[in-house]
Length: 299
Image 1: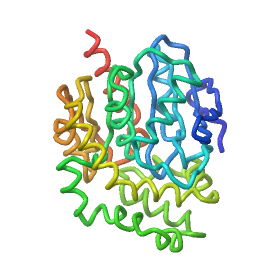
Image 2: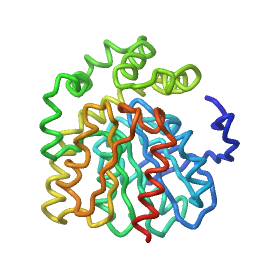
Image 3: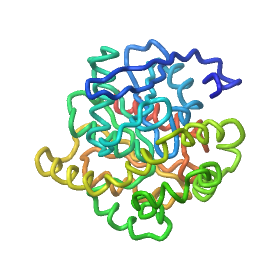
Image 4: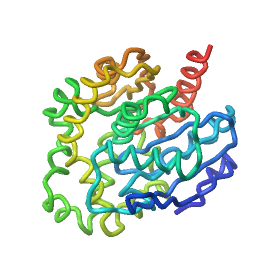
């Protein structure tokens, strides 16, 4: 894996491992020493590396930044179970509170699968989130998710859900599969290329890594049930939410509508020149939108 430093951004990164109470080890990367913390939760098939071009500007704006590999991804352990998003969110909460000693509410940013984890975190730990940023994915349990699930462009939901079959067909072909997976959802092939793409190929070629990734999709029905039940118990989220979509993404135009199903204070933003891989396709516009959102809410 590359050192973690963009050649144009000499950001000092610290890597760490946290042993959690459920026997899971989480890898995380941190940068900055700001009084406020932003937590970045990646998607599939990615790792913390998807935030490499975002972390520096956030640190420069005065934030401490934490980017974990959630269970099953990157350098974190790959247990056989626990891929429902509420469990994944509890892992990250334990990392922040018990391992890193972060007690103040955090700004939580989640992309793709990370959007689902971030929502589960915000619903479970309402007093521990000050702002929520969700990026380009459907949320199980919403009407938008149900509409998109039948769209042929999200065929991978069903494929990843076919236990053993998906593993059998992708085994030994991880590079080819990931190349196709990224390409069809990308507005700029150079955004994830060369050594950056190799980071993801290496991560998901590891034993059990693709299975763990597929299990995240196999948990969608459980996620939907939990999300609907939580909405019934707790009501909509009260924290300010920035709903970010890609200009050329299948779900991009629907993220704001979707979040209005589950949150009261929603601001929508479409990132120009992007499809699905927004933090890598246009990190400048994305980061500027996040910081403007935080400044506006703090004003």
